[in-house]
Image 1 (cartoon, chains in turn cyan, brown):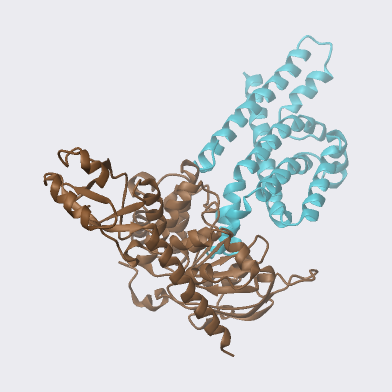
Image 2 (image 1 turned 30 degrees about the vertical axis):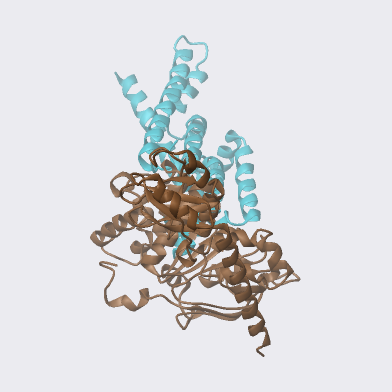
Length: 208
Length: 396
C-alpha cells in the first residue's frame, strides 16, 4: 500500500516538475524568439546558444548546478528549463518567420501597429509551430528528469536509481523497470493532453 | 451608405490625392526607386498606374498610405499632408487590397472584413451589420460565407473578401496593388466588371496598380503609364493614350492592337446605327422583295411578332421562297446599346452579312452596326486625339 502511494507521489512530482519547467521554458523561449526573429543574425545566435546548452550531458549539467543552487528542486528545474529552450525557441522563430509576408503586409496596410500584428496575426499563425516545439521539449524533459534523482530532485528517477543501486536483489530490476515504464506512459499521456490543447487553441482556419 | 452616415460623414467624401515631387531613394542604391513623381489623382476616379515590373509603381502607391516613407516630396489626401497623421490611423482611412487578397488565414471571413471597423472601435451590432452589407456588396451570400475561413474559398471569392475588407470602414480612398493578378482570366474579367459596378455606386478615389495594359484600359478613368524610377511617361484617359501614345515606350506598352483595344472603350450607343429592310414572318414575300429592290444592300431581316430579329434573308434566297417563315439564315447573335464595339465586331464577324443586329431593351430590332461604321468611328477618334495632343503640345 505504502509502495503504491510512493509511486503515485513520484509520478505526480515528475509530471508537475516537467509541466512547470516547460511552462517557464515556453515563456522564456517565446519572448526570446519574438525579440530575435526579425534579425537573421539574432535568430542564428539564439538558436546556436540553445543548441550548445542541449549538448551538455544532463549528468554533467546537474552536477555543475549543485554547487551553485544546492540539491533538490532548484537545480532540477533549472536544468530542465535550459534543455527545454531549444525546441521551443527554434520553432517560435520558424513559426514567426514563416508567416506569409503578404498577410503581415495586409495587416500593416489596414492600420495595425507592430504589437497588434504580433498579437493578433503573427502569434496565432505561429502557434501550431510553437506548440510542436513544446511537445518535443515535454517529451525530452520527461526522460531527462529521471537523472534529477542524482541531485536529490523529485520524480520517478528515484525509483530507477534505488532499483539500480540494489542490483542483484530480486526486486531491483522490477523496480527500475516500473519507474521507466511509468515515465513512458506518463509522457504519452502528457503528449495526448498537449495535442488536445493544440486542437482547442488553434484556429480552424489553419488546422491540418 | 446606411449607418456609416454619421457625424464623420466628411471623412468618407471622395478625396483628391496630390503627389508633389515625391522621391524614394533607398540607401546604397544609385538610382532612386521613385524619382520626383508629381501627379494629381482626381476625387472619385479610378487611376491606374501601369508599367513594367520594377518600375516603382507599387512603391509609389505604398507611399500614399505610408507603408513606405518618401525620401522627399509631399503627398496630400483631400488637402491634408499624409505625414501629419499617425500612419496607423492614416491607413485605417485608406482601403488596401493586394494580390492574393492577403486575408488573415486564421480568421473567418466575417472577422477579416470586421478588421478595420474593429480597429476604429465600432460597436458589435454595427460591425455585424456592416459585414453582411459588405458581403452582399461584393456578391457573396452572408449566410454561406460569414463563418468560412479563407482557405475554404476560391481565389476569386478570396479577392472579393479582400475588397470587402478594404471597403468595410467606407474609406474615401482605395489602394489596389494588382488585386486580380493571381486569379484565372475568366474570374479576373468578372472581378473587373464587379469593381466597375461597385465604383458606380461608391465613387471612391481608387489607385490601381497593374502591369496589364488591357486591365488598365478597362478599369481606368485615367492611366498613368510609368517608366523607370516611376517617371510619368503619359497621364491621360485610356482613349487618348490608345489614340496617341506620347512616345515609343508608351506605344510599345500599348501594343500593336491599340485600335482593337479602343473598340473596348466605345459603346454601340455612341455610333450611328445602320438599317435595312425588315418584315414580319407572316408578311407576304413580295413586300420584302419589293423593299429589297429599293435598297442597295441585298439583305433583309425577318422579325417575329414582337419585332425580335429571327433570320437574315438575301434577295437571292427570297427569289425561291414561298413564305418568310422558312426563308433565310438565322441571326447568330445580337448586341445592345450598352455593348462595346469590340463585342459588336465579334458579332458581325460571325454573321454572313458582316452586320451586327442591335436590339433594344425588350430584344426588339433597333438597327445595325456594320464594319464601315466601326472603321469610321476609329479614324474619327484618332484624328480628334491627334489634334488634341498637338494643341496641348503648343502650350508653354
